[in-house]
Image 1 (cartoon, helix red, strand yellow):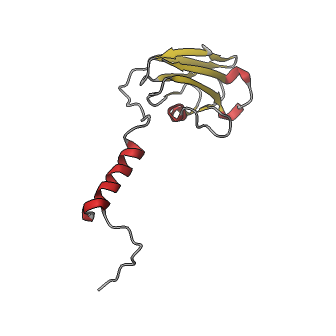
Image 2 (image 1 turned 30 degrees about the vertical axis):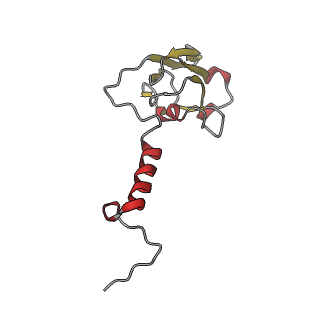
Length: 137
């Protein structure tokens, strides 16, 4: 018979009472309330085009829970990420755009909080040509 250490994690199906409640709260806290990835069928509320001359438009306005599509028409790849530079925590849904190769496109997750989301190209992060703002209203 195998012995189990007291610190071992039990499967969720075996949790009872307060342990089950705590596990459920943790699941909702992590997965239930943030921005999630857009499904392929989710229409974008705004589109930003990337070219050798930068992002166009530099600022877009969307309603809360909206999505922004980024299209790379440049000859080099770009990786759109949330501000601040190196931390990328202001609007995590922006980070879901990912790396865009030439001709590629990607979409933010749902931007659910009313705020201004600054973004930049992580590959060329201090270049103002590849910085912009998403105004979530």
